[in-house]
Image 1 (cartoon, rainbow, N blue to C red):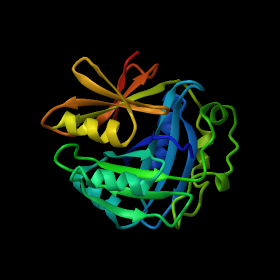
Image 2 (cartoon, rainbow, N blue to C red; image 1 turned 135 degrees about the vertical axis):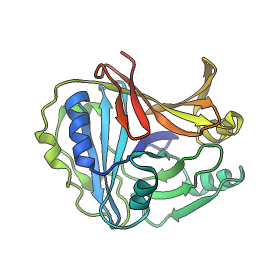
Image 3 (cartoon, rainbow, N blue to C red; image 1 turned 120 degrees about the horizontal axis):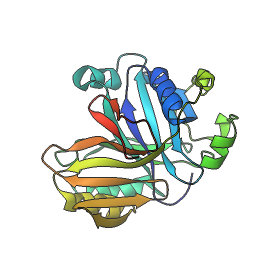
Length: 255
């Protein structure tokens, strides 16, 4: 895993991860990166973009009772969390707590995926995952060129199994192409958002069209001020004519 601060992915809770992945591959040319199965859920990480520009999104599907099944029952399909990689999870946790935010689920024993979770608060209303791994995913160009995947070299969640459960996705024919752009997040306190994303998570911050843009090497988050906080979706370039709606969010076609 890169040692610098970075955005890893935006995650969406869905009832059928492979079904959604087939749609995103068919319409956008989405490329599978990695996936695993755990006791309560399975996930699939996808890259949407070119060798030079794009981003990753994750599809989470419940496989048993647990937090994800409860989330879908309460909220339906839609955005679940943002994941960021950091050089030192324990230090990031310490600094996040200094902002008055609540951190749970700390796991530092698995070098392939150390993690902690910032609980949703009244400002952002979304989970923020902090992570670090001593392993790395292939670069976008390699992902696009080849279907070969070696899960032993990838970041891996403790206790996960079936790292290639998603391989039937390769059977889906690609009919279109797209590039994932910024994730959009509504915040009740943009100043606090800046302290979190720029001050603690190492983003490059700028202001544009009344919004705060936070950029990392692998993607960006655009923060809007508002009273209905949460992830509203992401921009999509070169995609289908109509937005792709995932529950309460949209992958917004920008042309």
